[in-house]
Length: 74
Image (tube, rainbow, N blue to C red):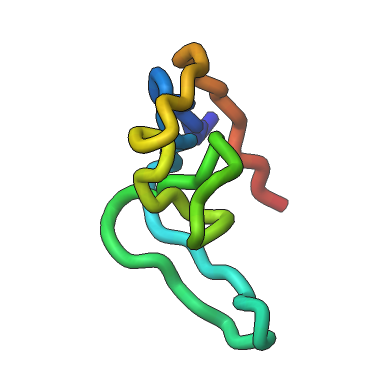
């Protein structure tokens, strides 16, 4: 069975491997770039839901963990 892992970095964002598509605030379909999606976990990013590194400036603290999910195909 295929799986995807979401990693919460120590004092940092959620990391999800791969690219993702999403609908922006104006209703436009967008696609992320690169091989990893970083989602804000501190709540202070100016680019929510994506991480912009603000967690470093505000000294955000949170534990690291990994969540493993099965990829369910119909």
